[in-house]
Image (tube, rainbow, N blue to C red; front, side):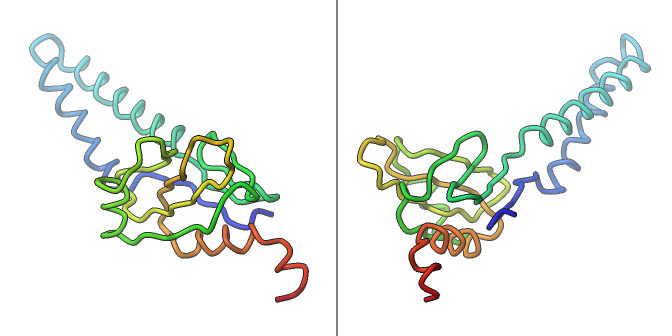
Length: 154
């Protein structure tokens, strides 16, 4: 069983806003064919919802490894994870961002966790990962990267 698991699903307002594809398609295609506009709008909406669901990244901590989206890193290669609330996360994603950082961020999820990479052979300075539970993810990473502490009971 994973120490931490979170799927970064889009927020409901994205699905609601995407519904505007249907009337937009009708508006564009109504002069040609009203049924074609309706069918096109529904197909576009279903396609968008499907692609959002299929591309929602998974954040998982299991077996001494952190997986964020399609990437994985051993917890022995990371430093102490630092959670960032909405205001700190804005700086992390903006002016404080290092162009070499590995990003798994979603605009609809404001908080992030910064995970330094301590492997000297890795040119990536840190991972920046969106999460709805930044303190919980950072705590799980920090707990899991110190197996010697868990074994000694401290």
